[in-house]
Image (cartoon, rainbow, N blue to C red; front, top):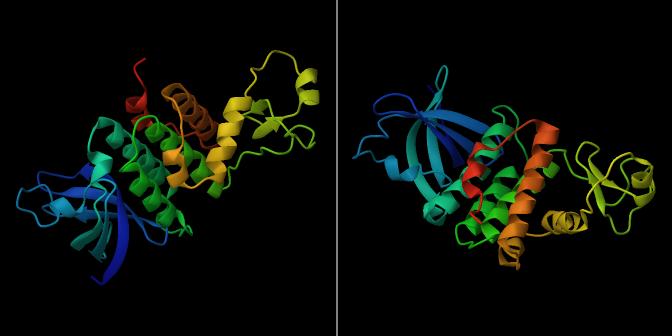
Length: 248
């Protein structure tokens, strides 16, 4: 079996038997790798501490018939803060769950790895409502990079420029102008605050998002907003996000 090296981010761990795990990775070129880590569940395993969720390692794989096998691992970034409590773990799980759904084994995706590593690095030290906001920002930034970017400047119904958008269509893929809104039947809430936050998240770095002033209610609203966007355009629902819901 030929061997090959790869730097990769741990996305998911699945029990295979008493001592082995199947681990899903995001490789540096944006491809997904699924490999068996043999004996990793044993207390004395050398691989055990190298393959934590949301950590990054330099790995050596042996190519297998069905699944590759992890031979060696040297940790590059532990991101321990992503697993320091339930809230951080849930947030990191959301990011990793989304990546495990979007990444493909035979399709490299430029910059996905670097973007994901940065998001997890920032998440590891984020506090309070900024944790939820980072997840919301990651959802909309990743979906935008993969072709599902919301239109925040032109009405999705008539194409007219919208200066101060107040209405948003998840189904249509972006903002609706006042003229088109007036011709529609039914009532739509004024969504200017959500649209403003969405524009901020799309145009900002993760560092800036983690440092902004946001309350719990707003962060939770934006997490709902971006999850609805995700489901509308990809059909995905993030199971991990349920643990991020605040208790008011």
